[in-house]
Image 1 (cartoon, rainbow, N blue to C red):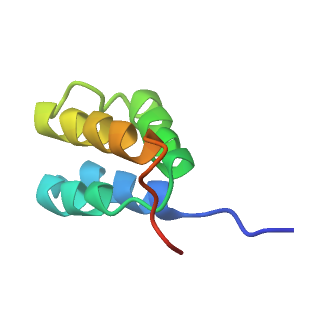
Image 2 (tube, rainbow, N blue to C red):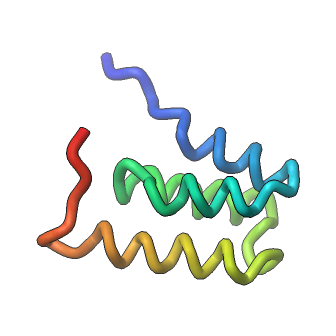
Length: 75
């Protein structure tokens, strides 16, 4: 079985600690769309959505970029 990716949990920890600059840097290099969606779901559950507008925009922008058929990140 594949080990679950812990990326979203680590970025959530950055947000909960108040380090939004580091969280945005990580969001910009997110490995997959699935990871970004897990981050967004975690933000909703932790009630962090809407707290920092620039973080929400970074998640939305990078979801759109990674969802584009021509763009992907190599493992």
